[in-house]
Length: 166
Image 1 (cartoon, one colour):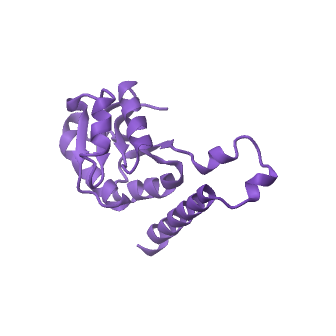
Image 2 (cartoon, rainbow, N blue to C red):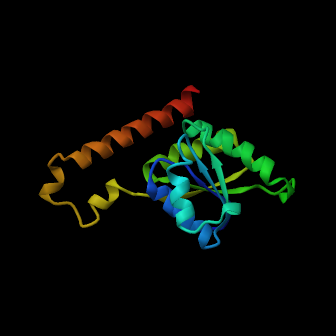
């Protein structure tokens, strides 16, 4: 994983918070932005318990969706990292689920083109199911398969909407 100025936890589940905290603790990012409504009582508690210092943690509890994550993170970083230099792009390690990553990067590039958004995916979910190969049982519908199919469909529609409609 390349180094970044900030790890952006797009919120929503503990996988993202844990991985973002690990990136900061490993020195891959100087700070961590936990973004999303309710983040103060969910991810932020876990991040603090994992050992991220208070001076490394920035909370954005206002973002309600991925678009707002991108817009609000830009505003936060521009106000907090002014001394970085005019011609140097801020490097943002975007931490989210693998299925959510394409839309997240698209929105980061759309709303903050001068930043360097770097994918830091976590929770590969559906891919893990087939890590041992495909068997006849792979074709039997299950709750997990339906859940991941819906997630991929949601992300695909969101990507199309932001790419071609908005």
